[in-house]
Amino acid sequence: MGVTKIESREQLKSQLLDAGNNLVVIYFYAEWNFLSISWLPKIENISSEFADSVTFLKINVDECAEVAEDYEVTSMPNFVFIKASQIVEKYLGNNEKRVKKLVQKYK
Image (cartoon, rainbow, N blue to C red; front, side):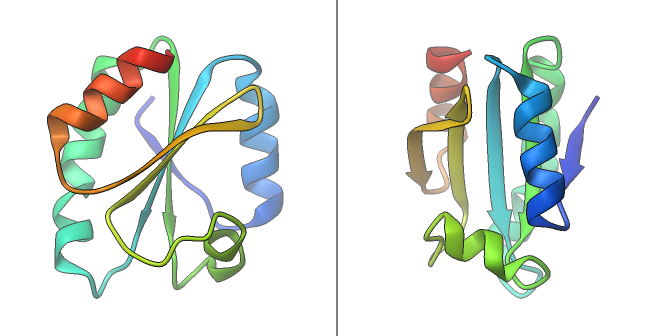
C-alpha cells in the first residue's frame, strides 16, 4: 500500500476513520529539510514491512501547515503514532530502529 500523502485536514480525518483501531503512523517532513527528505525512502521501506496492519501517512509541513500546527510539529523528522484516533506516542528523531520498535509496540 505504501505511504499516503495527506494534503488536507479532511483527508487526514478520513484516513484516521478508515484505519479504525489499526495503528496510523504520520510522518511530517519538509522539502527544505535534508534530514526529513532523506527519511522518505526509509518510511516507504518500513511501511512495506507492516503493510498488512499499519497505515502510513506523510505530511509536508509547508503544504499542510494547519495539520502540522494541530500536531504541534516544530522540528523534523517527526512521527506521530495514532490508534483509534488518539495519539499514543510522538517521536522526534532520526533512529530507524526506534521507529520500527514503536510501530511494533503499537501495531
